[in-house]
Amino acid sequence: MRETTLDTLVDVMRVPLDGDPSAALVRVDPHAPRRDVACDVLVVGGGTGGVAAALAAARHGRRVCMIEETDWIGGQLTAQGVSALDEHEHIEQFGGTASYYRLRDALRDHYRAEAGDAGRQARFNPGNCWVTRVAFEPRVAVAAMSAMLQPHVDAGRLSIHLRTKAFGASVDGDRITSVSALPLEGGEALRFRPDIVIDATELGDLLPLAGVAYVSGAETVAETGEPHAQPREPKPHCVQSFTYTFGLERRPSGERHLIPRPARYAHFRDSQPYSLRIEVHGGEIYGEESGWLDYRVFDRMPGTKGGIWTYRRLIDRDQFPGRPCDLTMINWPGTDYRDAGIIDRSPAETAAALQDAKRAALGFLYWLQTEAPAEDDRKGAPELRLAPQIMGSEDGLCKFPYIRESRRIRARKTVVEQDVSTASQPGPRASHFADSVGLGWYPIDIHRSGPEDVGTSCRTRPFQIPLGTLLPADMANLIAAAKNIGTTHITNGCYRLHPVEWNIGESAGVLAAFALDRGVPLAEVYEDARVRSEYQRRLLADGVPLAWIVDVPPADPGFAAVQRLFMSGRLDGGKDLLFRPGDPLAPEEWRRWGGSGTPPSTRGAAAIALAGADS
Image (cartoon, rainbow, N blue to C red; front, top):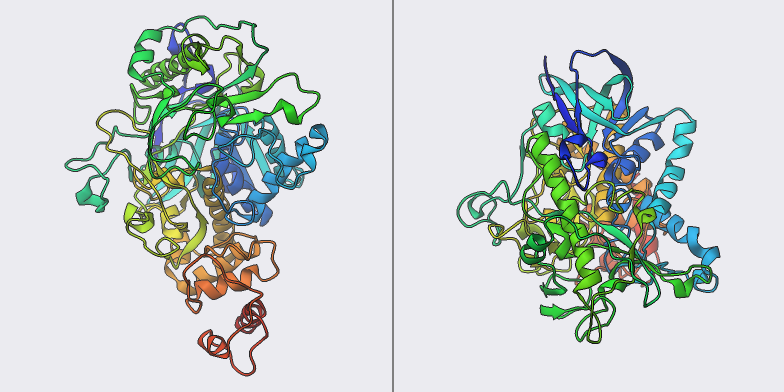
């Protein structure tokens, strides 16, 4: 038995914009009493993946505890301020889990009555922005996710511990036996004793505590074979840059709402640099041409989809008669912090870097207000007003920085660039994984950490999430459920977005419940094809797609049957992502699928008939 404990934690919500950053450090007394809490599943981290994991495990009747260091659940949707969903062109009909669609519906429904005529549109977007089909204020997502979890809280299956951060872990052989956590607002330390632990922290914080093997930063071509990996030596410090997002109001022209010039403004203006000129690569999904594009704050420039004001606009006042002004959130390359990383740094170094990152972000706002190309020949938009109510913080910045890349487990399976990129995958889909537990689609999009980061931006095929990426090779009762899965620095760039992380978390939660219900080790679910198939059927019953078939969505009666037909290998993937369930079924196709006798009249009916025969 070994126990690892930290003596100091960083309370990220208390990092000051100015003054001594050590004000955010919290001392831990490793000898202080701890209250024991038993549970089936412990979810460490209440972000996007953590919420989905807790919801899934509780939905299947397991006793679940979830700890979250901020005071908002939801991670990148909420506390990190990226409340404009990064999705793909099929998302309105396919590409998310059933529970993810319930969340999206709840976000839209919150605004429908207030929006009037616009709110009656089926695909209503409160922000009417060009990066996403659904934008919203972060606290609306907090409320929506809380409502999804509340029945399980009321039933006693789920307990949520906000403002609570892990500081220790005990390990016996290849099993985590306990995780200790500290309430950051004061109170008795807790020692959770779970059967299965899910690490859904934003940075993979549980991995070093539990002694789990992990990698960070950029691998080499020799290690991964990836064309865009580091050419000679690994660069652990080349972790995608993080950023502090912030929310703004657009007040009437003529008003002035300049913030005080932040410390180190000139440094960040010149080194970031602050610019609305960015290089767009072939991996972008917004419809721009590749190359250098010039944007403005408000004007739509040639070749662009719009200004940065409408890029991630959360509220379009033209759709809301009672709203006095537009609201937007800013997440732009100019706000990315590249001067230092926060993985495997001392608490004091981490707090200092976070403070610096806050200054970099607010410096970008000051630049927008004073120097940026706004519209026509006007420089600066002083009418932009920082809106702390959007992010729920005193300084107006998100409660926790938007994290793009985490520590990553040394997993049973690691997805590499060749598995997903269009350059390596000529068909309509990425590499097929028989152990798929979900799917996603987004370009490989690397926000570089600095000049040594090779990075890339390239298109991908619609891809799957292999079960092996969720399971570490060296810890029997741990599941990864966020950006800490078995990807590389390169492929993390497409597996890190909202719907993918939600799917990862949900599949992790279902996996934990399934393994406990069946009384089997997690490794057996991965290694035994029959057990794995049973688990995959449970995922399908929950509305989690395993393969890209966009015309048979989770709500379709034939969804599970068509998915099983594809996963069995009997269905030819074809030249596109369609199944065409209403098309007539040819007798030779019926025989190829394993059918006998007179074939059903349509492809969809045939899939359902075969699924019934296989049950």
